[in-house]
Amino acid sequence: MVKEDIGTEKLILEAAKRVFHERGLAGARMQQIADEAGINKALLHYYFRNKEQLFKAVFTDAFARLIPQINEIFDSDEPLFDKIRSFADRYTAILMENHYLPGFIIQELNSNPNFAAEYLTPERKPNPQKLFSQIRQEVEAGRIRPVEPQQFVISLLGLCLFPFIAAEMIRHVTGMSKEQYMLFLAERKKHIPEFVINAIKP
Amino acid sequence: MVKEDIGTEKLILEAAKRVFHERGLAGARMQQIADEAGINKALLHYYFRNKEQLFKAVFTDAFARLIPQINEIFDSDEPLFDKIRSFADRYTAILMENHYLPGFIIQELNSNPNFAAEYLTPERKPNPQKLFSQIRQEVEAGRIRPVEPQQFVISLLGLCLFPFIAAEMIRHVTGMSKEQYMLFLAERKKHIPEFVINAIKP
DNA sequence: CGTTTGTTTAACCAAATGGTTAAATCAAAT
DNA sequence: ATTTGATTTAACCATTTGGTTAAACAAACG
Image 1 (cartoon, rainbow over the protein chains, first blue to last red):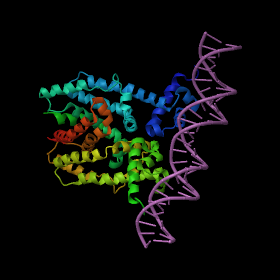
Image 2: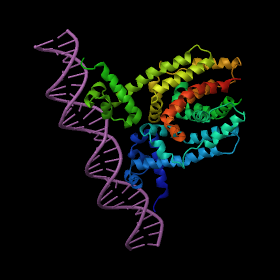
Image 3: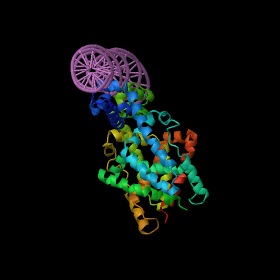
Image 4: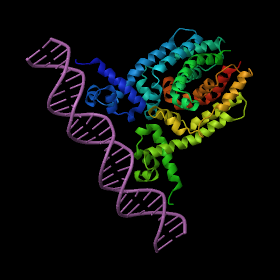
């Protein structure tokens, strides 16, 4: 065990994450990943036999950290409206720290339709069932308008995700600077729950 | 002028569209494009000097057809609620025929932040200004709740786009088949206007 | 001290790939 | 019939790139 030992693998994964994100699997260059990790190609292959393996490691790591956070929100015991507020708040916060991820994922879904199945294992998979039944109960109790739980959750997800997925597009069309856009996102964190709660309040 | 003449270029563009979509710029292979167009590599380069040029042609074509349709909806003279219904309906229809496009675009936005500026020229650019002022008027007249026009339009876009962008992901999580998902999308076309109109109705 | 393990250097290889070229063919237009 | 442009065939080239290898080096560890 010399020099870094523990740190190097993490350095590689961080660099690979950046490069895969910005170039995609096919466009990423092992040399660039090595450069950005501050090491050389030989050592890169010493840690990860090949590109696919490195790619898999990066994704597995990302999902392993994110899915539990999402399920934690889905499964919390809060009342529905509070949960919606928590969701918008926490999900947006997660996305701000992982703004690269949605594009990253969509990219690979196109070339590998089996991608979802490969990385969303039964144990590690978003599970909105509890939220679904919570919504059904509220509908039955007449506390919210009749709404299809699936439609509702996908709406909520879309409202949160879209501004990250389409950030550059939106910025160009609206002419917002990066700073203005950050403000817009912060504002949106408050806007979303208000919007969807109004949409389902009887 | 022999054989196809007019048809060949279109064949190439169609094939390129498919391949670029599923592999991305870096992942696409000129040979595969030639194959899918039913021609050979030499002829492919006879029509398009190189990969970048072909790529640009595909995108320019796609934008040239889509942006006017979007602006047409933005600029129509309908009252707001009708316009929202038209938008969800027509925009979803457009997306069903171009389901590949959003992923296609997001992909390239990551590796080329200047992408938006390159393809959204001032003349050919989504322009929601009229819709914005329409919303402001309705707010001022008290006919809808106070809402930031930008937030609202981005919400509307996100609600329409997200189910296309994340289709494979959603299908895997929910376990829907392709047919079920098509039904879900058709259902959603009705759900979205209802949802957003409720959200802003006073 | 010698072993082990992480790390560098540097050269190297095979395959894939974008792109080119030259010659031949084929069908329509003049 | 000749010309012209579309198309094919097939070989070819330069470059990029993923991946390998071997030798040397450095530092912890027993």
